[in-house]
Image (cartoon, rainbow, N blue to C red; front, side):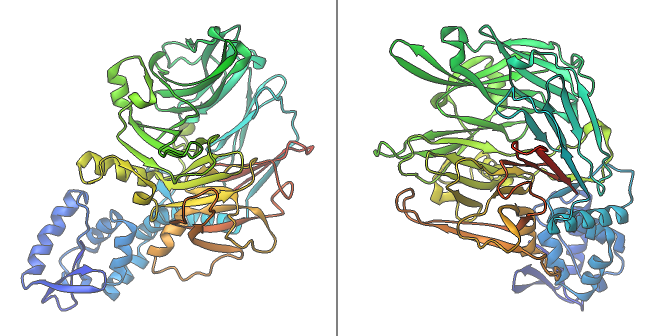
Length: 574
């Protein structure tokens, strides 16, 4: 709880929103000692101590500035209301203003060196303004010959775009004027037979390209250098087999789903319809490997599941489950798995019920959803690609789009990864009375957003704190904007905390604070959620068509996809 001293310095108070209560006549000495202790501990306490600038002139203002830089956005906003001295100090400090802009827009400071703080602040403000008004600094069209070797023969990973042609794999580093990232384009010769390619992923931070191919009932995973296409020398094995057991069924009845990589972990989802007599048995398996050693960590089996890495310690699994006696009803389960536990257990197979999750979050119950397929849509920001000394990055906190796909609609639950981490920490500390499983009504009303869409072909995409989706049914679409819109969740959170924000909102923007849906056929009751965000309509001048086939989100770019056009890709960057 923040502690402050009034202008006279004779009595102390504790700031508790609108209320104040006396701390004691010895507050200056007590707070001074606590202040210095807090500073030396790098503000490790869950509160920030502060005081009136005029009451303690022996404390250097540089020290106060350093403390506020380590404070969170809410504390800085409250400090501005303490006195005119604090307000002037915060507004006149470029370091504090840079901290505010980073937190307000979901960014983190880059490595030391390079641009000074004043230039970083100016670049960040220019970037956020250009993004909010949809004024890109670069626009590139791709009149290319895409090879349809995959259902999606392209991919956007942070600030790198990858696509396949007839002879090569093309990679583009997408430019950003404000982050000092130049445009680069290069090609690499594929080290696999492209027709056998099943799925791929890149990690530009580790200069890694991973491809999975299937040939004559044999599945292999290959590791290449993203920049040269050569075999990846940082791994013990550059190629290793995936024991998916396709030989037990017809090879055309199987395939690979999503693939994801985090640090030394790589996961790939395998699915098959194995013909066994008159009926086909569905099988889905998540294969988790340490790509540096080529060792199998575990295999997890279950129906209609999906996965994503939350951190280097936690794996996210989602699957549909029937929690009620009604046969056609389904609830999606988001399960957090401790990766260290899986590693310590050694290579073994798990069925989903055998896992011991750290915590579980449940979706609302959906009616007539026996065909539900839950999945995750989220992209992590990349930070150290090719040792670029960019001034700032996307922050660790990001939006996770938890998508439930049914035959009649998509429903996406949007929540912050920090929300999941809060549940993990609370469970680990034993602070929650309800154990580790949380029903929808226990967690969702204040920390997520829910979007309903009857379009089966367009699912929400998330990158950082931005989400692109079809505009929800309860939002009025502004003129000169399409039905496809961006939602900026970082700005939504910051708007409530930044009392200094007096700037007018850009044309066509909308603060989307409260979604309420009531569909008696599909939901039980009314779903009410709160997750503030600002709607940024994508102007028609940016789209290739009124309704493009796909929209991809990157760290500082948008790629519009329409494969029916002569120039199927349009990239705009900021």
